[in-house]
Length: 149
Image (cartoon, rainbow, N blue to C red; front, top):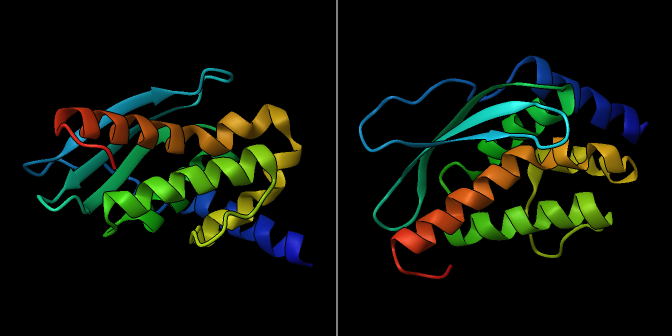
């Protein structure tokens, strides 16, 4: 029953993508990313506040249900959060997908519905595509601002 509920949640995010649009407002940055294993693509847009809070986030892209649902879930989850918390969420998502373990003290929200992807090794990059792009964003932000989060 829970698997069916999770499947419905994933399909809802895939069909009705949240934050699926370009951001064109001043101060917006973006990063394009391609899944190295299947060719799914996405562009992640974000606007960061001076105190390291993701004020706005969105994405555009095309890909499988898992990758698009995961991107949708991620943008909902990280919007309005401090970069320090977002980094923990990214690491928690990687732990969930790669190791099949629920991360301690990390809120993954709807993204927990992707837990079953752990069993499908060939789909790990699908579930992590947006999160991998986010990791690159965090790394670049730390480098640019000479900080470690």
